[in-house]
Length: 210
Image (cartoon, rainbow, N blue to C red):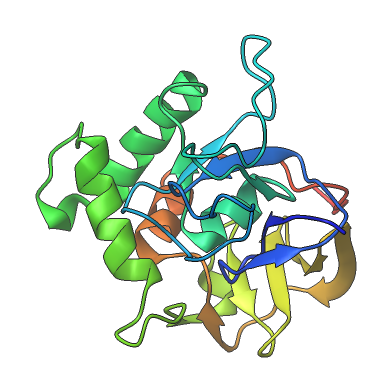
């Protein structure tokens, strides 16, 4: 049986065989039997490399953070994770600069602290009832790397003028981007970072015209 440690664009943690191309962290979510008991433990949700400095730590070690896995970075961003400052310092600095430029109205300056970014993101990704927060937008206005809700279980990625329907193993082409109302899965402040030059790692297996 696959472990429950794969994250969808809705931020849900599910059990599927596919591993993904990136790892993540929300704190210790599992018990001593490897069962996930909560969706997060703190406001720092990060997106990491699968391998870093040759470390080979257990996926669900007792009293250690739960290793989560994403299909790709756009999926992690939609779920509300930011680049890790430790294993991805260059990506984190680019993200922080784009995030600060796109969210200047928050008054956090050009180099906000990670804890400040995490606080804003936590308010954006979790609704009052604890569910995934969705925000209205026009599809044609969204930057590359954005995710929108297609229905209760289906998510679409915006990438280079086309839409890709997400699955744990990759994307299915879902037509061109057209103007129209949608609900976004990617948090608003991350959408602003994407619109201000942050370029995530390319989506896994999705081809689109340049």
